[in-house]
Length: 495
Length: 95
Image (tube, rainbow over all chains, first blue to last red; front, top):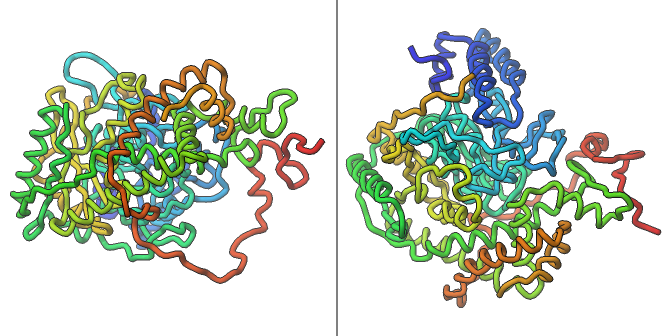
């Protein structure tokens, strides 16, 4: 029998309900796995007491016959979600010592559904990064290694790299993530796990440290499609505290799972075939097309003509919104204060922000400040919003012809830590396939589909119509069943 | 459009981020590299296109104009680097 820590959400939930183990045994097993995996640096803080307390409640609830959807399931929480009474940092020194007095809506929903928390997961600072190298708490390391005999430490992707690394290493059964331009999907692809970003507005942004508010969206990261459906269902729902929250009911995505795609049309956007993409990724994409055809879908070639402008559009809009959102870190109300001798209030702001923000965060704040500044606003920001409208229109037109789209998730497998960090632009280009769906606000997920010649996972991305998470999950399931992805990294990290 | 050292100093000042001469020197080429790449949006014909602000259609909800929380001063101040007498404290701003 597989050990408890091999199980995902459904396995734990069902085994716990069947009386195969207690919730406390589950919490203890994962707490132990977390404690022994420091080499991954996946956690900023560990919260074993929270997991145990939730498990005790779950064990009592089982005795009383009052089980909740996630009773007995411990989770990792990305440290971008405010957790009442538990330090929340967004992996930045500027939030040093910040303990929220309130709970984010998403974590509140998960805890109310019976889940416990194993700890707060590391991430790129303010979720700005694609490799987890911008965290003030050090790089997260992927559990995967290339099969070339070298021991190069690989990036777990970003920004939800603590989440992806921890799930791939089986030290958490599943985790929350957030996705602004690919921060759930790209790390999922890099580590051989599943990650879904729902429609913009599905999950409340209340209590999630803001990066770029018109793009930020929470989502689920898990071992497989079913677990992603269960977790996303528990995270989603209308919240009056978020003005962009959608007032729509949450479907029962797990119950609705079906890999039969008869009658569905799958679009293959030709613009996603980019220069310098490894042939292995193209081959895997072709396999994905065959798998969906085998599941009953009809394949249609389509065009998303403005795809190549998505990244430059994103790198205007996201920094612009970030420069505005991050203006709140002033050294007055929370977090770090740097008050040099004799400094006035303005000096204090500037010194605090210089000391507290990391280099990538500063870079984006400066770009955002520049594109919003007098004389440049129309040339950059308004222009980007217009191109964003065209990108969104591309998707609308495509979804008149097809039900879902299939693309690769990322243009490469995981790269080594340090390999791209010297050139910000090169790092940005890694999000080329994930950013368009973020700009259009449509649901998208990455499912593991195979290994490259170096033994590293590759993912395929499925993009759906607004609010059609079910269609996305179902196509994901069809790929999952046919890809038979069972590869796991060899355990080098446990102590 | 490209930025020079004076522009970088100006936007850093607008963004309230203290920068050293060394920071500015490093940032000028970095920002120009990124801004140069962004310029390609100029190729896109956006005549008659309305700028997109909200991506998924939604409406602004109204609610009754009543107090829904409050009386949590101590919670609000709990994370302040410096709080005195029930207020946030900052360096003197009036001579």
